[in-house]
Length: 441
Figure 1: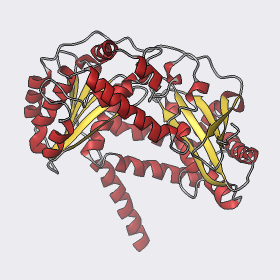
Figure 2: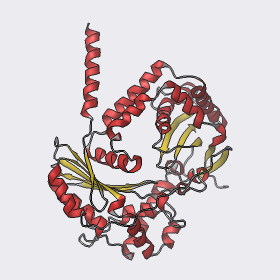
Figure 3: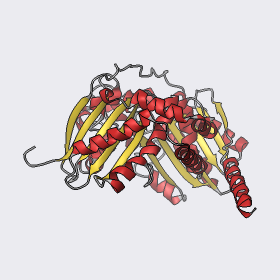
Figure 4: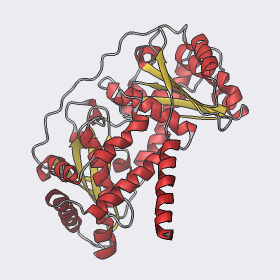
């Protein structure tokens, strides 16, 4: 009886946690095309104001890579009403924090404030959209900042070419601008003229190419009025023509070698081109990643790290994007283990997924992991704001913040086997030997 009561209590706890994570929101459009999403949560006096622009590295012109990421920095320089260098000071002085980030598909800016500074946050983001100062001193300053970031995060970081895709995407895409890394090249930024930066802003940083999210301790009607006051007068821009480039399928194995002077341990990496983040198969691949390398009980970790002691670390994860995706698998060699040995072990795990259904026990464990991830995914208003903007802009369905878990729940063992066969094919992948740089290379 005691065990049954514990079991019932556990189910009740899981059920209540799931309900607690239900995110209610209101969304609508202003006349200028700005999409607005509001989430009210008055449990803590905190509010996040975020603006996501539908522009990423894939939207850059040939020979001008790095523009989208560059703007992530440039638009903190100042506005007509915020003095140069004062953006961060204003946020900090009012008890807030802020940041921005860029991907292949979008750029996101946000501030988190005590909720009595909601209006300040709205004003600052409207200033960024309407009145940014884009001048040569700002471009020159941020050019140096971006160069230092590239040196720190990519050029001088161990496995930087893998982490930031710079050593991967040129092999995986021929036509699509995903073939360029998000951070771009410094040569392209150095060659750009001031008018090109202004033109990039005029093309993409308009209300009809953006989503504004306000999440936290707010009053919906009062917030709507402030949004209309600050963002309503901003004029719409031209309609953005979206990238529409289809890649030819990869039909022959790509074999390549990359060198890294910052590492001592070689790695064997497999990379597959996969479907858009919006496709159901992308969710299945996410589950496959968990089976292979999520935790010490995962298949690759148990075999390659614990049992055979041929790897010191294993990895498998999808890099999801709006148009296509990438799926990476890899292992770092233990001692003098040949990379061929790592490759054989990874192939063995792939074949198991392709030829055998995962057990019911493993499948239930997998479902539990994703349920737990869902329950914890929206634990802060800052996270909720980012999720709402992402689901709207890149998936076209804001409701996914609550409903995405149903996709995972609906995935079957048979589907996992089917997707492994569909995408993890030897003739459709990059086999990358990632080696320490030596003086002779």
